[in-house]
Image 1: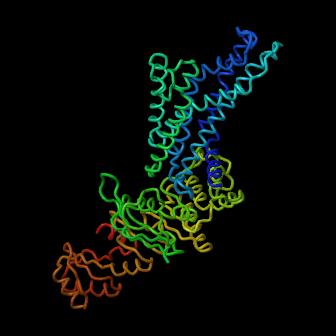
Image 2 (image 1 turned 45 degrees about the vertical axis):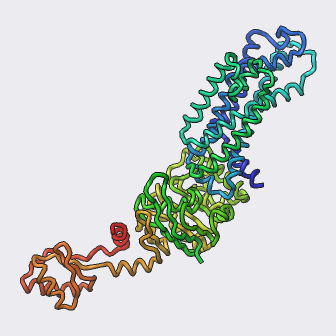
Length: 254
Length: 301
């Protein structure tokens, strides 16, 4: 119960916050651009140069841009912004003098970041489908004949979500550790940039968790035996645990 | 019984000089304890230790008779606090800021209206805190500290940013809380004059050491003992003699003669005697004998 109450509080803190606006704008920006492009060119899903599995082709086409640039940047910014909210408002001392365990505080804030990421995925998927369906209705084009692949969309969304976890874990850890907002943002952007550069040029690029969403977006071929979903799980577990120990050790955070 | 008791509490920041040296704080239950000291004396460090915002290094810390580290959540459940500058989410409204705390303490929404009214913020509950003045933020911080009806309030310089009216209102509010709900209040300040009308007990800290601790009456007694009359004359030797002849025990300091505070009629008589014997009298004054001077004397010594 304490955790739920704590999470409610953390979620309320996101209201009108920069992270919340980022989630809304980031989630709908790319679908909106697709939508505008479709209106301008009178293109709809039927214009894609494939005969079958149009929904799947569309999924990867729109996710490619998102997964390489916008998603990692959004994760870096939102994780850092949500954690740094306490430093910026000088509220760590308020949080740490409430009757909740250090573990609850850590988990509740982390859960709020994860919920915000989930909210972003929901917005993006709604936008993505709207950008596909609305132009078809406007131009009276038919929607693809093949049935909508619900499980494909769900599984692939979950896969991408899982590859986001290590980035969230690392950003959360750095944001808890450093008071200066530029440290987590700067470190995150640097890790991401290096990872994107190396993703198609270095065979060991998979060691960087920041390369996982770009790898999905660019459909990068991985060496045999390497599974970025498993690596994501391992990295997440390690960095979430490390973040907790850093947070517990550094009690004087305000 | 003491609501707060520390035993030989010491603390130093890594690589720095000791900030606290063997503090034995004793805050009786139901009292209003003024924790005084100049800036940098160690007040905020003590309060941060009491709230678990700093890790205890040496000594013992008991709140409600229980060791803090082992009973942190139980103790914080009964404690409200305001440490240094207000801690508020500037993008949220006053009501939303209170809501966050309400969830944590599991209180009904109607309690928010009660504390907003209590803090004089009843009509600005839906305004975002970023648009608040410093005084309003301070009031809201007090409202947050009071939300869960704590048994102990720890307030670090809560009148910072308040106008004179605000200071008086806060004083009345704290007095009422103490009287009606028997709330123990530990309030820090660097100005004795600001809290002497409020507190029942006083602790004076300087350079990490507790210089005085006791009731306000104890301090007032000390004040009377410390007060003196000062004679600045052209002939200190003759002045000493005349004062001794009058049964007083003068002390010579920096060319001036000091005696314990005496009645004005006695001073007038001695002055006549000095003039009659040809001693030039430049000045006769009573040493400052208010609580502030005692505080300053303690701190300077």
